[in-house]
Length: 436
Image 1 (cartoon, rainbow, N blue to C red):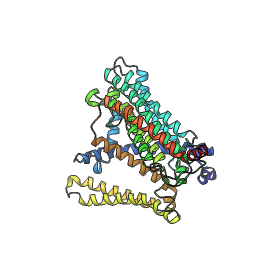
Image 2: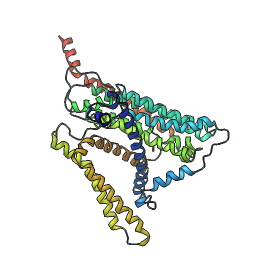
Image 3: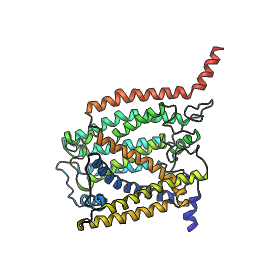
Image 4: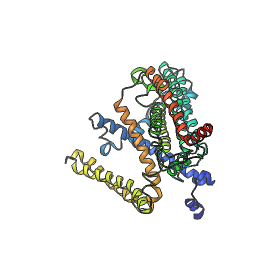
């Protein structure tokens, strides 16, 4: 029995490819629990970051530095009255939040958190993620239509127009990365004769970046960087986040497509939003930032460097634990703040223990792929919050103008130039033969 459970751990394939359905189910449960926990942490982190951007403190009352605030919010939402408007289509009204959550989490099946840390590796992985994530907008349209209210309907129509406008530019940027994955050559501008065919497999795209000794954000610079920038802008619109949060513009539509939702149903929309942010950030990290690859995997190769980079995330966790101790020591010696102080000390001990666990060499080497991938996702999540705190909301006509008149032609131009540069050796040979 034990051998049956642990036999897959020595495999160099994902559970889906290896045909191990037990470990595929285990990975699904881990991803669901991990992303749900990440959403809770992101909810707290976004509120704290926005507060610091605006020179405030943010949540401070519930738990040390407000760490238990998401739990309090969850309890509140689960106990609130579930109201369904008169005249609403109750079946679709109930189904809409379930649909957006289902599509948000289903896309994560093909996300490669590491060489073997994915549910499965599809040969059409990118198409699968784009297709399933696009279905999420149907839930928003269903919510707006079923609410039997003008504001939600306007929000849902905005969402559909927004998705169509930005998915075109996003798709062309992704095709640029796919083209790069089929190029043979080392370094930023390395191109050789006999280039291969691009791949739609998420795992193989990361392996192509490792084989070419460059992340695709730097490939054919600035082409890769521009393609990445187009995707980074489009993914904000795809997830309805500020400054492109027109489907739920509270200054115009009260709350947009989820105006009539409350309690647990409303929280499902928020869960789906953060899960969608995680999914598109995963695509960006995989296509342009090397996925699970640590920095300089070819330049700084060897067991010593592998161990050093594997222990770096654990070191960052240790720093967080030290910061908790530092803040606990600085807390005012007031009886009313004693629970907060004790909570910070306990939090510091827990984080310190986790950091030490992550720095044990066998553990660090085993999960270093996941750690670096999550760090890259965290970078994109920080950008989401930074944009929300910095940029004012666009008007709807400005949003459409950026999508159709700016991103679309630029992404098309980047794709064409990338193809020309990638075929440069073949074009040169063809021209030379023609000259003869």
